[in-house]
Amino acid sequence: MSDQTIRYEAADGVATITLNRPDVHNAMNEAMRRELLECFTGLAVGDDVRVIVVTGAGERAFSAGADIREFVEPQVPTRYRETRRRLDFRGVMDRCPQPIIAAIRGYAFGGGLELALACDIRIAGEDAQLGLTEVNLAIIPGGGGTQRLPRLVGRGKALEMILTGMRVGAAEALRIGLVERVVPPAEVLPAAQELAASLAAKAPVALRYAKEAVVKGLGLPLADGLRLENDLATLLRTTEDRLEGAKAFLEKRKPRFSGT
Ligand code: COA
Image (cartoon, rainbow, N blue to C red; front, top):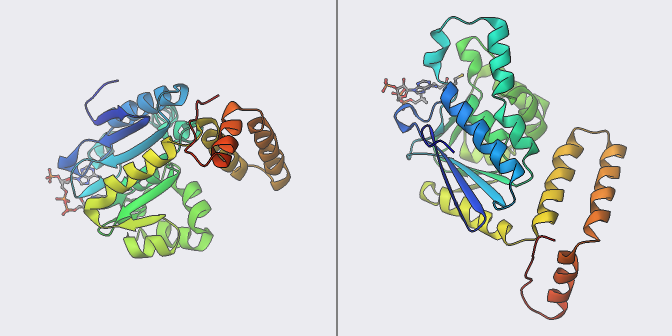
C-alpha cells in the first residue's frame, strides 16, 4: 500500500489508518481519496485485520474536509461525477466487514466528518469540533453527509447542521448521538485502540455478521431486515466458535476463537 497522504499500520488484528497531511489539518485531496480507496478495498477482502481505526495525524484535526485548493481548478461536471464515483471510499467502508472506529481529535469538518460518519463507532476528544460546513462554500456535502447524518442524528438536527454549516462541540455531539464516546484529547487514540483490541478478541464471523445485519438492515424495509438478521443468526449457529463460546462460559475460561 502506498504511504504518502495516509499512514497504515497493522498489529494483532487491528489496522490503524492515519490521515497524514497535518500541515493542512489533514484536508483530503485526490491523492488521499485514492489511497483511502486502495486501503479500504484491500481490507474489505482480507481476513487478517479484524478491526480498523481511522484517525488524523497531529493534535489539531481529524480532517478539515476536502482540500479547498482543489476547488479553484476548473470542473467538468461529468468528470467530477465520475471521479467521485470511482473514489467512493466511504461506500467501500460500508461494505468492509470489519468494524471501523473513528478516533477524532480537533476539527472534523465537511468530508472529514463524512469520513467519520462512514465509520461504525466514533470516539471524540473533548476538543473535537464537528460540522458539515460545505454550505459556507456554496456547495453541499457530497461524500454521503446528507444521507448518513440524518440516519444518526435525525432529520431536524441534520438539516440544522447542514443548512447552517454550524460547528458542534464534543459534548453536544455526544448528546445528539453524533459521537458515541467523549474522552480527554490525549486519550482518544488509546481509547479507540483499546476498544479495537477488545473487538478483535471476539469471534470474527459474529462481528462481521453483526455489522452486516445493522448496516445492510438500515437500508431495508423492517421485514426484510428481520429476515436478514434471522438468516445471519441461523448461520452463526453452525460455527465452531459458537461451540467454543458456550464451552468457555461453562468451563469458566476465556474463549479461544478460531474464526471458523
Ligand atoms: N483545504 C485546504 N487547506 C486547508 C483546509 C482545507 N479544507 N483547512 C485548512 N487548510 C489549511 C489552511 O489553508 C492553512 O494553510 P496555510 O498554513 O498554508 O495557510 C492550514 O491548513 C492551517 O489552517 P488555518 O486556517 O490557518 O488553521 P486555523 O486553526 O486558524 O483554522 C479551520 C482551522 C479548520 C477552522 C480552518 O482552516 C477552516 O475553516 N478550514 C476549512 C474547513 C472547511 O470548510 N472544510 C469543508 C470543505 S468542503
